[in-house]
Length: 112
Image 1: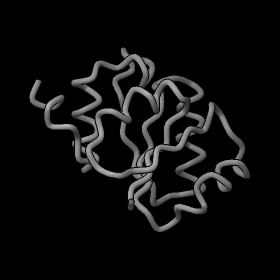
Image 2: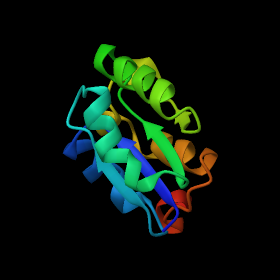
Image 3: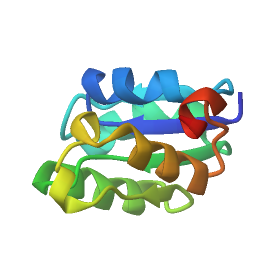
Image 4: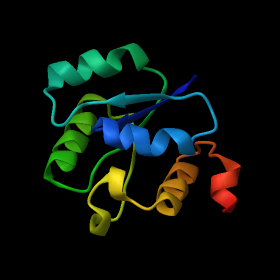
């Protein structure tokens, strides 16, 4: 397991987990966090491929800025603002985002 995907909430995790066809760790920040809490969450995964996929809203942007400052090596992937939340983004769009992040996806879903 060499990839870590950072999402905001359990609904985001529940939405993307079935799409992924490789062992990854999906971490929920449970909303906006402090720099200290973010370090506690991500420090054990330092050196791994950290992928950030958060909501296209104010709290998602705050979290994204914090991750960029504390873990500049993290890779950031975005959903269109019109979807607002990872949890409400269409599956096809999430599959495309995961593929662009070099995450192996469930082929049955990708083809369907």
